Structures are given as structure tokens and as C-alpha cells.
Amino acid sequence: MVNVGVCFCVIVMMGLGNLFCRFVLHTDMTYLMPWLLAGVVAYFFVPCLVLWIATGRPPGKS
Image (cartoon, rainbow, N blue to C red; front, side, top):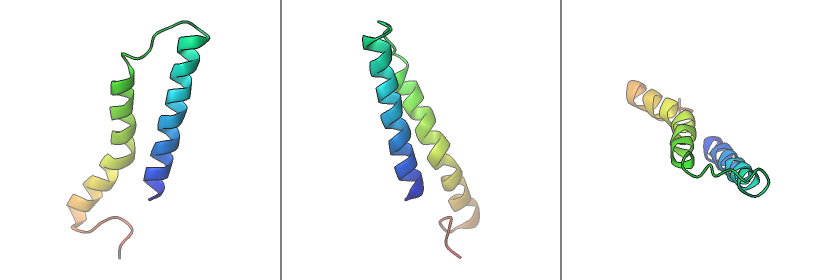
């Protein structure tokens, strides 16, 4: 659950940064957003998935 919360916060901050770039800096960064979102999701969830596959049980369970 912590990964979901942190991932949500990072995505919100990326959205705010995109708004700042669009309206203050007058730069369009929307073409990067899908790649950045995929990178953030992979950063937070791929390690847990790898541990789950390697050990046969979800991380955090004994």
C-alpha cells in the first residue's frame, strides 16, 4: 500500500510540473508524460513483482 501512495504522490507532482512547464515556461512536455508515467510505475512496482515471482509469496509476508 505504501508503494501505491508514494506512486500517486509522484504522479501528482509530475502533473504539477507539467502544468508549470505549460503555463509558466510555455513549453509543451505532454509528449514525455506517457514515458515518465511508465517509468514511475515500473520503478515502484517491478521490484515487488520480481520478489513475488522469485519467492512465490508477496513481499512483506513471512
